Image (tube, rainbow over all chains, first blue to last red; front, side):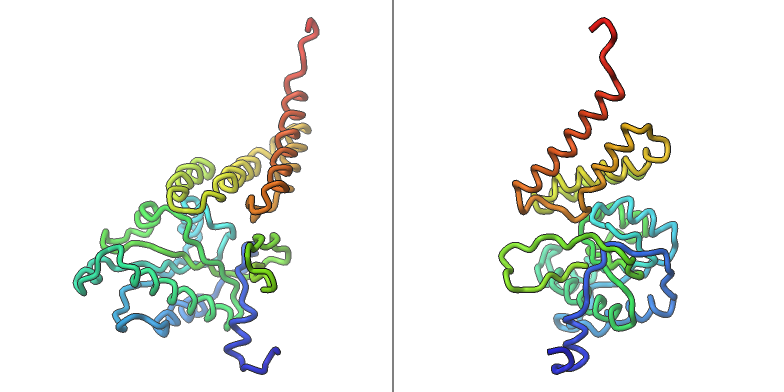
Length: 175
Length: 92
């Protein structure tokens, strides 16, 4: 089936979550391309209430990992998808309005595919202390971090995928 | 510091994440602690760390029996390590 549906479908089909990354760096231009891809994510009302913060400082990456229990890889770069609560409130959104978080997901999915398209490995992380990450990044209190996209290069050996439940017949998509 | 930070933040993330992640997070913390201990560890501790590290970092208790058996294996390795580190006094 490969190739029949075109390169976009192939990219969707071949992207994997990478939980072990090696020490190869991510070029600044590549990090910029992944972050700019967020601008093309589907977004309700084109409001763009999800700012994306690139992180390339080795020090900050190390500190982020310290407060992110879900961050298994040691990424060479990262992009933190946030919600701008102040701007959301100006549109009349409650801070827990589901649509705000749906758009975090569409932003992340687009960035993961963009990373894959330029040969980078990626791993989304949501298990982290929002409060600690906001402090580390020096964010205004109206900007809340929601999802970290880890970026890097896949190490040769990967942990086994998490066992899927109730998805018999579907291929595992964790690497 | 790494383990301390992990434990504190895991306490917070556990309030929102799946319950199955609880043992997963604890074992990850143990593995990170072991990683710091390993360069200075004695032979029995190195053996324990090897058994601990045989648990894949992505393992969760979705196959509860297999997961329980694996954690029990690590607990047995811990007991063996403790017995080696603290042998019975001669008068016992």
